[in-house]
Length: 304
Ligand code: ZN
Image (tube, rainbow, N blue to C red; front, side, top):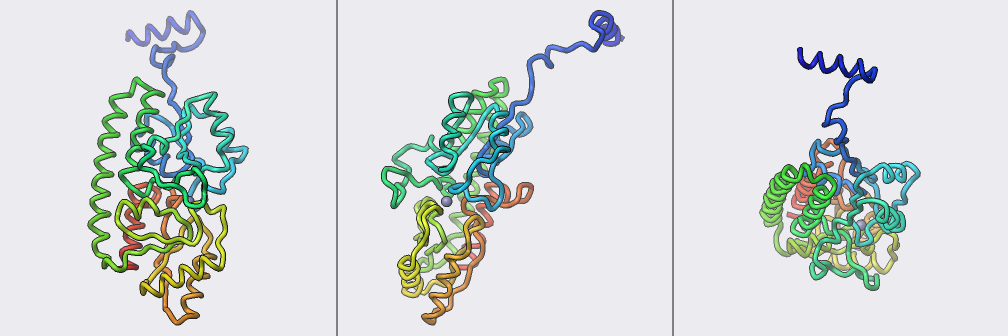
């Protein structure tokens, strides 16, 4: 009855409904992330306390991606922008720098201590941006996202910190799974051949030799010399399978398969690996943990 009475007074005074204290102070913050991996970390920490979206979906190559008009309006509407940094989003650097002067913008992977970064082969004074394939390094990025969410919305600090702790524990379990599964591959078969060099941190963290036709960016093309070198390596080490990436053209890997077969070595495509983009949102491979597990299953099944 009391509520009805209050409501009636509001109508009488203002001609429409009252706004309560809560309505005056809260509107859900909006977060825009560049890659799916970053978006997934945001969602795991903030859950329904923010709305979030990713600029780049499945199969999109971040090295080559240019922001569209639609992306620019998403960036403009965002309260927080999260990107990888370390020049992963090479064609969006200027836009991201400009946004950083207007709103909260965080390069999550740049929170990783410099001494833990690998230099980018072929690029002067640059680091390899593919940090998400070492779970331990990726945890720095997750913690950085957590801090930026707290800066954005300190009223939910305890909620964000609790979820971060839980998510980091899930990442520890994932790492345990990865280490156990990789033991199924014989030591002399632990060589991962892919189209572009997205797995340097993966190799470093989990003790696998990684070889790629293209460098760390897909911007550089591959040449015949690279194909000959990789073909030699495959034949010398009797490697059974090489891998295609969901965000990179198959052309280069197919050239290696042809090269090996011409020399009498039967090689097969071990399957698709998620490298710079995850699977469809809403599926297991559309999450960081699901994508990582799927890659491990594909690698182990093909090389063991
Ligand atoms: Zn890449």
